Image (cartoon, rainbow, N blue to C red):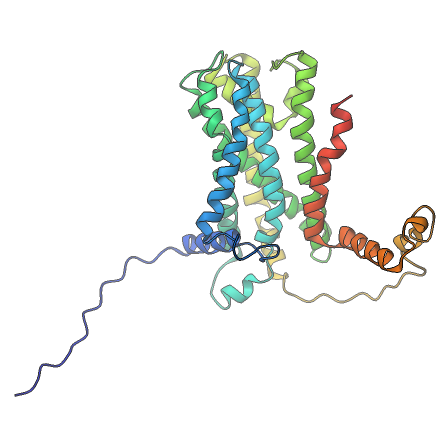
Length: 363
């Protein structure tokens, strides 16, 4: 009598396969949240998972958003201008610092290899990741503001709905604007100068976002004398936070004519930016992506004489301060990083922006 043979268990039916677009979004989201490198991380303090890393960032944004409690019993437009101005600061710095690495990643070819993925599918997947994370951060920061707006002077239960819609519009506008800047740089200056221009654009966007977030609210408060804003002032229409604040005020606040005008302008500006960034200029991104890994000819240009920083260290007062050769070499190395290294510039220059704005704030 033959012993019964061990048969393997039947295979379970596989679930439905994910669409290529959804798979790409999940891939780029995981790569983005893990970061480009682990510099500065310690094993005992590093997050144990991607989810915990994102949760820490969302908790920080939510805690910072509690400053909206100072706007209790203020008009809806005042609260909304503050929320949208600070949201623009955070999203502008985040998208400016991340978009270049997400959109033009030289290492993604090693991951995708020979898979038939079109540049347009890559663009939409990357834009989806930037927009998704932007909405998470914006939602965390505005969490307290949703409830503060309900108890505002002219607020109500319609404010959370209106503010959620305007926040989504602002996230799309911010993401589309940064992508549009990169595509215009690619079209006007070509692939050879794209890396340097991306870094310069990131620095300017981040600094402009910090300056706008620090100066504009104080300027509005100083002109009106209190934390009150007048949507009828013509120059407010030049500020993107006022466009989306006008949307909140039109639907959940006073609903005056100037607020509806600001809301309409915000809708039109967002639509135009999205159309240009994701439709009209999408082919420029495809061209730049195809030539990303191509080696360019090395230009052998040697300038006569020394660099300007080498001349400065031998001129007073730097010559007096940098007498030690080790100190002088360290200074030259730091200056080279500040001028040439992309990561250092993105970390240092936006951080210096608030200090440069302080003299104007105290005037």
